[in-house]
Length: 407
Ligand code: SAH
Image 1 (tube, rainbow, N blue to C red):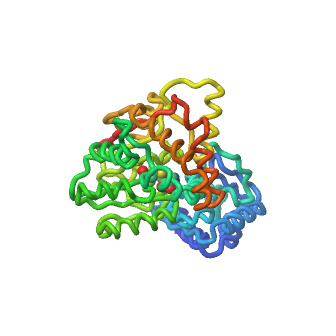
Image 2: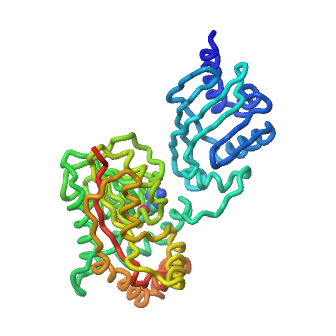
Image 3: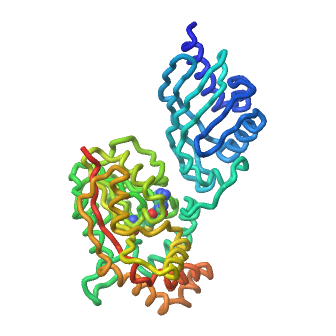
């Protein structure tokens, strides 16, 4: 056999043992002094730590499985591309992530393994794995966000509306529902969704916005949320609305979606990117959109500079709602371009949205005791957040924009 053929056969065994017996994989497929590198993540040079790392990883995600998608062998190297699937034990969310390894062989054994993988999708996994020191990041994890909504989904319906996004107010007399629906209509106009198309709702809440969209189109709609209870409630509502055949919600993480490339004709991220690493989320959405398809975004916007004190108040409020940092208009344009989208149009709707916060404050004042009696003392935290100074800052505005995946 040529070196390449021997190495390719070894790669098959390596992949099988990874799924069935990782300890044997280490002992039988690697040289005793093999170097294991995951760029920016880990660098191991002794077998004992390799064993410890795999053991911890397996404990953290017992059902992980990898499959090989392609291999290329040249000389003493094999480049392997694959996909790993499993369940994130922190959130219960199924994950699917692509990886690539460059393996360097010596006498049929791997002496250097350089594996590339987007580790950020395993944030919660890292938390539980002992082999790695975890730096507390700026961004919330999937279980933080899901926990936030466990607490607040029902309370939000009471204190604001069943749409978990800002309203677009034209007058003081508008009801919360009218304003929230008007914001939804603004996004619907921008979607340019063909009647026969497939639409993706990234961060669906309890489904109110896409159920409104479903009334305007016969397209097929898929919504995802990191919070399982929301998904169940959204599916119940789709059933009640008689559209369950073409509107379905599923439990999934926007940062690693269980969809093939080039699947959707349009998507929106309706006040959901706020909880995510925006660049990663946008790249993942770009992946699943067809070329030419649109993404419509509604998100918070920083409309003017803040003093250090105001920045602190904003950061505190955002952290409490499991949200990431604020972006300015210029930063948003850069972000969208960096993710690979072309901006189609950008609206600053801060003035029409600002009343949302005031309505929440009024509702908390009017219904504080009743809410605690109904939902228990935990709901105090959400009400507190609605009253917090960070939420009242005039520099915290709102944007609606449409972007397009290049043809
Ligand atoms: N678009 C809905 C809900 C907005 S609230 C509406 O307008 O009513 C934000 C939503 O994003 C919640 O449903 C939350 O669970 C979801 N979300 C946040 N991070 C997510 C992630 N990483 N993956 C999937 N959904 C996420």
